Length: 128
Image 1 (cartoon, rainbow, N blue to C red):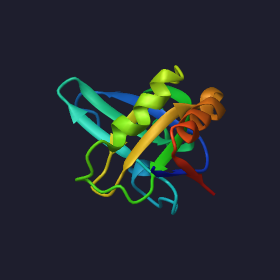
Image 2: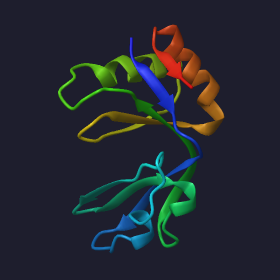
Image 3: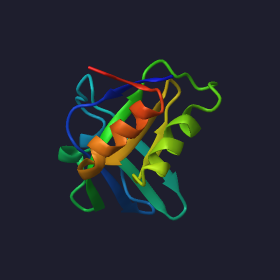
Image 4: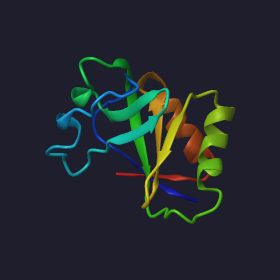
């Protein structure tokens, strides 16, 4: 069983062109619950951020909600599998990313209730 926290607000998944500069607004004055993830590849830059921080010149998919795994740790085996499996069975799309401290999942806002219900049926606990 994992403890999962639902972060406030909606999130966006963004794509910027290869070689783009990371907008300052993504790293400045983050709120306590805000999460921003940036990945660079030769093909471009991917950004996951609160919707109100989405870069104006990016291709943006919005209306995601962010779930945070409480107390995961980078060396925990099977964490994402334990979460993605039930979501896949419920046919809920998911985008995942990890930090040094924990794992995060994005689910479509319109499927949040179905997604959290699937996670609870799998034995996970939604906090707050």
